[in-house]
Image (cartoon, rainbow over all chains, first blue to last red; front, side):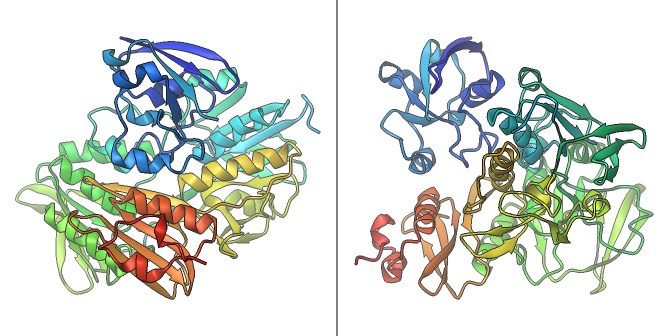
Length: 102
Length: 418
């Protein structure tokens, strides 16, 4: 079980728990504003862009080459950017905080 | 603008319809929102149907939104209900010839339906399947699981047919794809892409046969097993226990026709999504619209088009004038290959193929109309897709000799230096 917190662009803080699926699915299932996941989670649309809290980067891991390339389509991407459809929910990301990109 | 007494009815609850409903709330639509679909399933993602949904052991669909979201946004879902008549004069429609529903604004997100080709004996063949709904895929899975020979014939070598072939191969099927044209994907891609996917499927053990026009199908017994014999015009034949049709779709225009709307290859809409009736909008696969970037009329069957148009029409319905102006994009996943497409390649004058050095199966095809980049087809090459997207959006010129030179890694430096 991983407890995950999303902070939306309107500063709403949503903490939810899950054991499986992707972080994108978790966000969509909990109405987290700003996470659309239009392509259904296959790293094709870049509508699930989040920023990982700097202290959580090691827990979450780094983006693959495809994901890194796709992130270039997001104007505000930085070193903490991830497409959260590519982050599986596991115990390893317990207590991680994601800030949703605008 | 809108009041709490207004009612927006949306017919069709797939990507276009569902996103329109939620975007209406974002745009502060105060009235009722009624979302209707003949499909009884809670609205789901369609692209995975021919991919992961087909290979998964579960019949649980990948939902577009959880059921709670509809409640939270006060969207009334009427699923498993068919709109049988539309009366645009009195602004009402009928569900299953009974229930009458009035609307202030109506959105037609009626999508498209599979083409059933006129093939002798097809109507009498009870066991053929289309590829459109979750129920179609469940039926294919059941039929496949019950089959003894695991022989599948797919008529049509477009994206959906090929994705289905790859998925069924993955779960052990013996698959033959019959394409009528001289090459698979002929309608949507150049020969380079067709050749790549033909090789990919062949390497994976799927038989891709082109110039194969099916003339007749018949039920017969082969070694005591009930099979369908699929005959082609060149006198060859193939047997299948599971026969699948993937020969394309036609837009659902029946209700639009009843409403007297202007029709073309789809329901004609302005860049606001408005049809020829100011209270009726059309969105998604069924909408024949003008693409501002390419200055051409198109009807697109894609998630991108459905999602992006839904934002525009929701805004316009709520009195916020926005024009649809996007560069189309698409994707297809087959085996472990990712194809990403940006732009419309129609009317290209020339193209450049880039095969990255020292990397297997990393290919991009760049389509031009003289100096203008029209589209990029990227195979396992997201960087090419992303750079292409930016160059098309910004109408930036490319130095073709730099693009063609694979000794230089692909980067934004392919731009023409002024």
